[in-house]
Length: 290
Image (cartoon, rainbow, N blue to C red; front, side, top):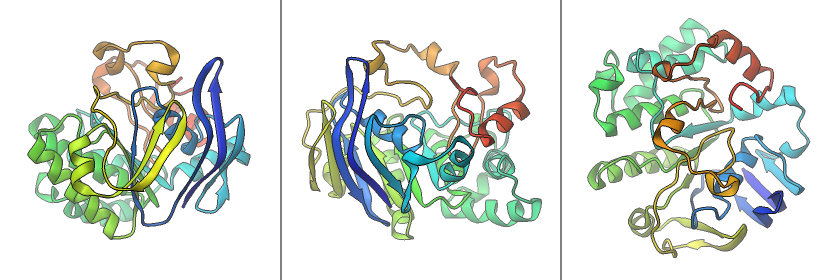
């Protein structure tokens, strides 16, 4: 499903990945772990075709994405769902509308939306919250909406970036049980995390990165000392790699473009046009969030 063959990526004098080779099979559940700045964010950005490797080859579902043209990028991103630490829901849309919007921006019909959205909401056990707004939900419920949004366009791969980072331990394990359920149904799950306790308890495959190199790939424990969590921001170089420390306010003003969704935080003060963002993304443009 995801293959890295001797992939190297540098940012000037900073290391992203060095000669990384990983083979993630369809249906795998993989934890991607490592210290801050180790190369985890680079790994994700390469899969999403936000950046290209300096050398090596990356395959997604058997297709060499290192050779894709800009117009092919949206199609390949629709094979991937993204789940974020900070949920990134549209505050002025209901649960149903948040998930439906992910289908609307890729041109799905109203009939498809009516059939698919209730099914996915039931899958993540929030069908009864369909008419609620994000601020009426608990953190765990908001993350379930985020997962539903990521799943609604039937991605082959679900990439989860610190999905339990803002949750209490009990709720975090509830979310992990949900992700395991999704994985059992056939979706490949790649989860970036610093949650040592969760990795150790789940006993899944662990791919460990340190200083840009794959240092371990086996089932078992986390293997690193627990560190402060970091936030992945699509379209942006890892704060460690770029030498920047992003504040909470900086993060709130960023906009993300998930593989199958183009969303904006309405409360962040963005004055642009959503239609233009959608058009730019579907044309393969990266400028909508850089």
